[in-house]
Image (cartoon, helix red, strand yellow):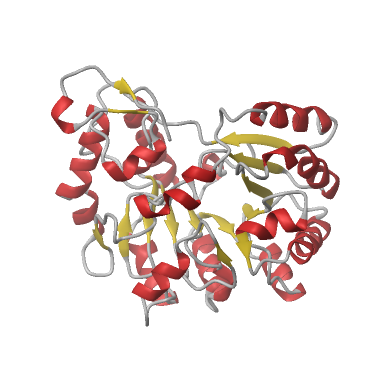
Length: 363
């Protein structure tokens, strides 16, 4: 897959490379521990919760109301996060906002790259000027991701209110055109597959292949952010990997683009007792603009669950905290916390910890 960072080539951070392999061995071991001896490998860092869109399935507006006065992470705070996590091999600059709205974004990328940390960026491509495009290409990113949710303008803009599909596609094409001759960044387009748009997957795939996009990531399982009130806008409208015609649309897209360089990915395979979520073991720690540490980007809201605050506590204290150890122990035991169940196809309650894991169908 294109999206794997160049860990093995990281000569500036050999300790981070060693830590990653220790983490992988720990995660895959039948004796995985709730108190891992390795450090964090990858972090999702939220530069801002400010956004120029108002997507119907995104909690950005809600978080902005709760974080008045703390919409952005500062450069000094970002530096503190990197200092606190010396084992980091990769970061993703993403979250509940549009990263290019943080005026320190490119300084942040530059700092991470100067330390040998691989950097991914998720952006909506809606407001990219030629200057932003040039800066993105010269920043040293190894991966850029954006979202296009259909082959038709009206389909995309139905969910991404305030978005302009023609403008986003124009900005994306400029990025691809100016990338010619470079090995990086990898360009990824994610499509959130809803019940109203998955039939457009083949047409979108053909369009992206012609543009020169590297990856189309089709996501049939959507998050409710660990909160029941988001279920109607997310889970209830998702196509689901078992929706009628969904896999046929994906296979048709692959057939139509097999002569191109487009790789079509299908995200959203549920976690289980045999395939546990890697994020609490260091492959996806989420740091909000406030410094609050959330287990993953699928929750992304400290109001649901937080492991601690990296601006106020030493990272080792957070990493080895009771909250983190309890979460890992629950996942190892199969007693899936309520805020994690959206990503799991299996669960058992804490009172059934000694019983066989039972299948729970997703609504």
